[in-house]
Length: 215
Image 1 (cartoon, one colour):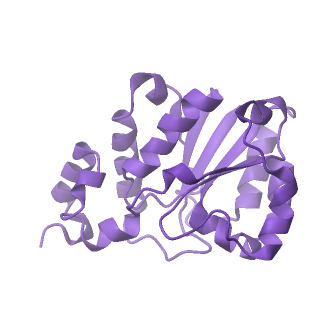
Image 2 (image 1 turned 30 degrees about the horizontal axis):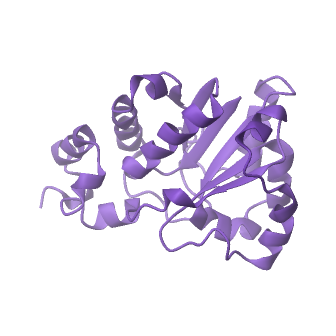
């Protein structure tokens, strides 16, 4: 099994790292891949350069427990491409890279779930991977658009083992990750919310004068 967690990670915070801490023991994947994007299709362009975001992510991963850290890696195929990518195309490429029956799990935030119907070829996502949706502040995982609810409901599961028994097609909701922090809030006032950052990541932000931290 491969688990893929996409996002801008601008900057990576303890909520992002908690996802790996929870999913690696629960799913026992061969690898947990953080997949930083270059230019998000449905979000504002990252304010921080690719090099800084990748460096902060690598620093953050080093703070994870050894048993989790050993399974984590960064997939930088999108980050270094210079263009935006549709998730369906990235998952199609990843699916072709592994055995046909290998389980592929894509992790997204609750905010993305609310926008899912606007994603390119979104109904094909479960043909390529399982979807695990983690809670985000202000985005209910149950009050989603009707079109999304109708599509996902038949695939819903709360059985972790079902994700390992098949290559794709299941959907799991994890509202417990609704931590009261976001990268947006950190970018706006990183010094007041630095407790949500790994200390070494915060030190890097200060040293590089990111997010107006030098003011």
